[in-house]
Image (cartoon, rainbow, N blue to C red; front, side, top):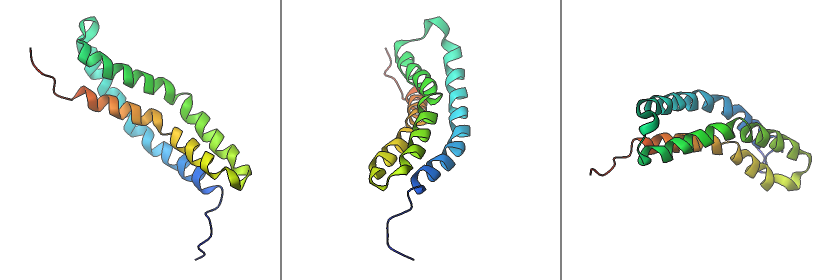
Length: 114
């Protein structure tokens, strides 16, 4: 085994391979958020509205940011000197799923009583 740098395509390949495995988990978390959000309707207390907005924003970004970041990651394979940019683009692909997971976790944080 050589101790040289990893091939240029390694980061985009790993990111592209991991995204389909994250998608079912995020879909389940979205269903949980929809279930919690459906119970409160228009009279939703402000403590629930914030996390639901985070989940909604994460879902919106997942339709645009994740594919765009993966495409950018693959386009940056052209030059070896762009390795940092490849890592950043690969990390950006996982921001929307992380937002959704964080928003759902915030839904279950205990709130102080009146």
